Length: 311
Image: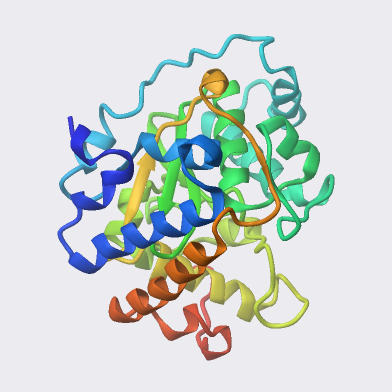
């Protein structure tokens, strides 16, 4: 079902021409940086398993798209098992396990050589060793660790805004998680929020309890050195509300399985494969975001002037 809209054709599922265009430009930028399938490795190969998330596909994506069974064989990836054992304890609920793994991934920057501006790439084991914190890399780590812990997990991407995140199935429900920021929002009734629920009501980000805000750890500060300043936390929470979960965003969900590592290659990357292609895509993306009425503060942080607080 929806096979003709998978992978590089995923933008065609959206009705808004500017959303479709945004998805096409995202793909151009990614291929300009990583290269085509033969050279791009996992960061390009993973695209083949993605399908756009919209009203047309939501029921399918939340019922039949991701297999519920975990096919991971114990002992096949011992370093990932050790990382899970660091944080997951007997008796934890699925939600508690997923939050513990999220925090381990969020704080991966405190380990190894966390220099995404210097190089990128590697298997999930190598990403743990590097202290990797790029969104696409740490999301892969989160997904794999969740699967090793016995929970289905998958990729969630906001292509126009340019961010990769994840969803995990725990305690009978899909829950959206950003393992880079340490963000796992809830619905008004306290249940974990899925990506489709957040896309349907982005103002949920204005109604998060203190416990969710307490986990938030942005990768950088937009306003000085203090990561947890009130203005900086407000900025990033608003960015999720207005950009990553904008109703016109080209959102997508994709499958990636820890037991299928032999299907992928994991090259290391220092420089873009085609910097001219990448830069032109970035220029056109900026123009397309303007046409989509993305907030001005997306490209100029100093224009942000709002204060969000925990409820």
